[in-house]
Length: 365
Image (cartoon, rainbow, N blue to C red; front, top):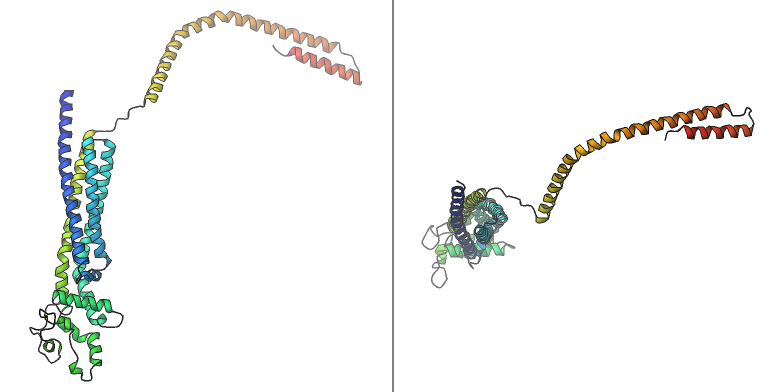
């Protein structure tokens, strides 16, 4: 029966080891893929010469979500190496450390995934609000040169005009400033040149039909698509990929956490073996206690016999003590009767000397 039990235990451990290796490999693939995806999205958005400033529209939270996905993927890859060592050696302490770190990875991936999806669902309104403010309030004004350059690059690269429509420029601060610069306000451009359809040389195909107020709009010389939709379509897919990568990392860590906990449960509780010195002290103490118990059981009859033998001697000693006390009392009475009368100093000294001697003789031996 014990052999069958050990065989079942070993087979269960072997199966759990194989399953843990499998989920460990999945976690490696997911972590490496998430890291590569995070780097690709970062370089595709941030390092683009024409569209690199778009990340500033979303703010630091989008960059933070991207970097968190990269760091989580690297952490999983490093964790897989530790897990491989722990599963192969079946060292309990290493398995416990691995289990704790996998739990940390689960919590971190869940938090990063929720943050990424929060950025994704707020992205459309964020892009619309930011581009509308750029068009209506910031474009072309003194001190906003970076915003002007960013909006020009967006309209040229995405081939769009305005935030929600090309009509956004008709009520913008830039258009009001342009009208002040012309004696005949009808000659003031109503759209920036970056809204125009460009030729292969990079020049507007028909500048008059693109920016003049008397032109009929929309026409084929101006971009009709709004920039907010274009930017959102370009950003929301990478953000969605980051969210799915976080979900994959979370579930792979959850499966690995379950197999590792089952592996620790199958190993059973930790049996603490005593150290060699403690074991030696324990054996010596047990041996001494057993010897004391044996000696006590052997010596009890002897003690009883010796007590019974010594009982007459004790009785004779008590009798001798009583006789000595009686003699001392008699001597004291005789000394008290023979003391001289008077209250002089010598008589008082003699009486005190007799009294002291009598008290010493009266004390029991």
